Image (cartoon, rainbow, N blue to C red; front, top):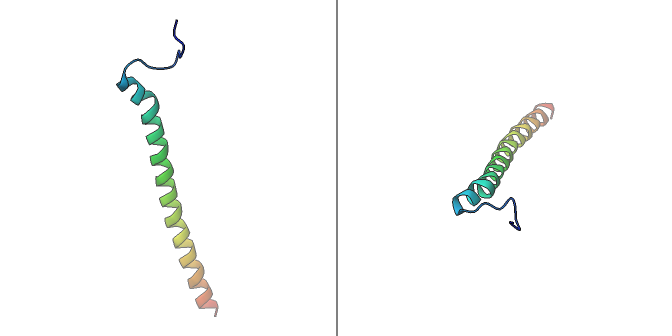
Length: 55
């Protein structure tokens, strides 16, 4: 009888079950953050250009 039924036995299984989803999640978060930053920079630049044109 195992105390932790979901705990894998080998280190590779542990990495596959826990570390890979965590690293994948972090990479997707970083990628979405960077793309969001790029979109924010473009929108701010467009906003400044519109303000300069209106002034």
